[in-house]
Length: 323
Length: 171
Image (cartoon, rainbow over all chains, first blue to last red; front, side, top):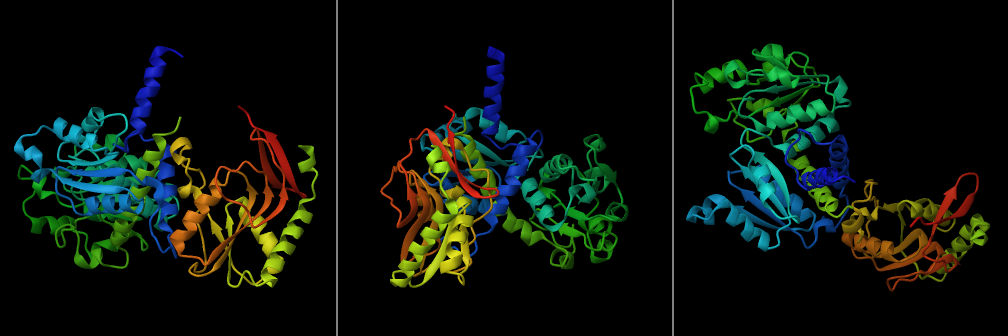
């Protein structure tokens, strides 16, 4: 084998140790995550609802940005695989006292941490951290800036697959603040990978990135048109904390034009499902009765979040040992 | 190895079944919970128990997540989950597998069973005990005992008739 080939394979192996993005993920890994998640879902009559796959391993939740749902589902997932979990809230930790990110990581590594779950406001942060850590550590991206949120996309693919048949027959509309949404970006990559019939992004021009159609999606600037005949509607949270300029006249105005209401939901297919990655702004991007309605699978997304994240962690920690 | 391949497996199944019946008659098994280890132990177990425990439900155990070698060889590709359609607590578990070798599969199965509850006892029933144990585990009933070298891999095939197949492992 040529030296360059060896380097390539090593680089690829290093990549596989981490879970950083849906873009470029292999179809094999993608499918394995969904299948594994399925197998973790049935716990039935078990007295002890834990599996021993990560026994003796330590998982560190490294959150540089607040999060409730993602952090707790990761924590529960790790615990159901028998791992020990430490939560590090960076906002209150030593980085505040001037410790550099590199030093924080080194410290955690020397505590024999095996998996870092990283949430960070900067795009590319998880990859940056993956390059810093030692060979025995896996990094999972739990959301980096506007870039990606790959496990959430896997959770949503799993949820769609449980409710619908073939992706190749589905029209999926992603509605709202696409511009600031890492979830949307990961969803689009994932939906493309599974061969979705039509992927739509729907929202006001100021919240839809320019040239997004290059990603292979259709852009709609009218909610009514974007919802027509949709099988799956993914509503996105309006990310006011990331808006630095006047992108919207008012929340009221936004709800009037782009709020997902009962009335508008009728434009989609009768059996369409409604999803939302959370947290929900009721009365801003979605009407309360839709979020709690019969077509909503929002709570199912939350519980699927545990099994899918279990699958990702189990696969990564087994991959490390494969020859 | 031909010797093993020529055995009449149907007869062995019947003899195991008879031994199991006598255990039952001796009142050693009072409240049976039948469990087969996927996959070989499931259909063999069903065959063995259909005569002596025709009424009882049959559970299936997938021990993939309890194996001790996943850190060496990765996760097992089959992902069908375990399915025990009954309570384990206080029961006399009859655990079936097709071939007993190192004992590691049985160790994993027992660990998993205890995550479902605390059985009163576990009986181990296998069709072939090929020796080579690495753990202190022995069967309560075995159809046939034959010490085989580690270089052989044994499978039970069920095409037109049930047969043992012996392969030499590739190094």
